[in-house]
Length: 245
Image (cartoon, rainbow, N blue to C red; front, side):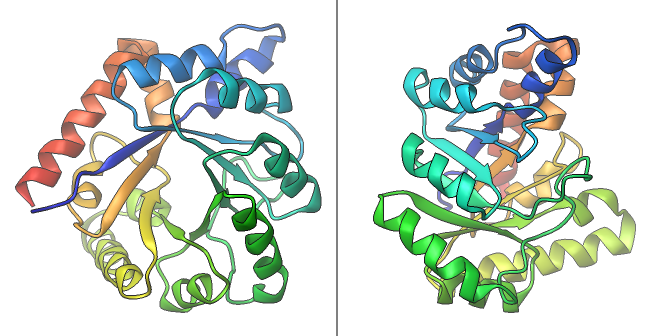
C-alpha cells in the first residue's frame, strides 16, 4: 500500500501581496490557518535575505499561532541559522539564494559545498530541527546530502513543470529515479516548485515521494476560487493520483 502523501502549503506570496502596499493585509498567518482548515499538512515559508515577502515577525507568528509543522526555507548563512535556532521550526530546508532572482532557480550544490553545509546541518539537527536539502534530481547531490547528515531531500520539479512532451517525460524519469535512490540512502523524499493542477499528478504518483510543497500556484488560484477551495482541489488531485498509482 502506498504511504499517504503530505501537502505543505507555501504562503510566501500572501506576504508578497501585503508588502506591495505595506500594512498588515493580507495576513500570511491567516492564510496558514485557512490552509490548515483546507487540509494542508504543513506550512512552508522562505525568509529571504532581502525580506521581499516573509518577514522575521511572520516566522515568529507562524511558529506561535499555527498548530501545523513549520518548514523554514532559508539560505545557508550565519544570519539565517541564528534565526532558525531562535524560532525552532519543525524543519529547515536549505535552498540556494541569489538576491536578483525572482524565485529559486535551481537546486543547492550540496556536493560542492559539503564542508560548509555539514556543520550547519549538525547545528540545526542538534537543536531538534529536521534538515532538508533542496536539490536537483541528481545522484551526486543525493549522496552528498546523506553524507552531511540531512534527514530529507526536496527535489526541484521546476524543469519538469516547464517542459512538455519527451522532455517532461525525461525529467519525470530522473525525478522518479532520484526519489527511489533517496530511500536507499535513508533520506525522506519531498518535491516541489512550479506544481499545478495540470502537472501534479505524475509527481504525486511517485511512491517514494512523501510530501509536496506548493505555493505560488495555490495563491494565484485563490484569487478565483478562494484559498481553501484551491487547496482542497489540489489535495483531491494528489490523493487521486496516489491512490491510482
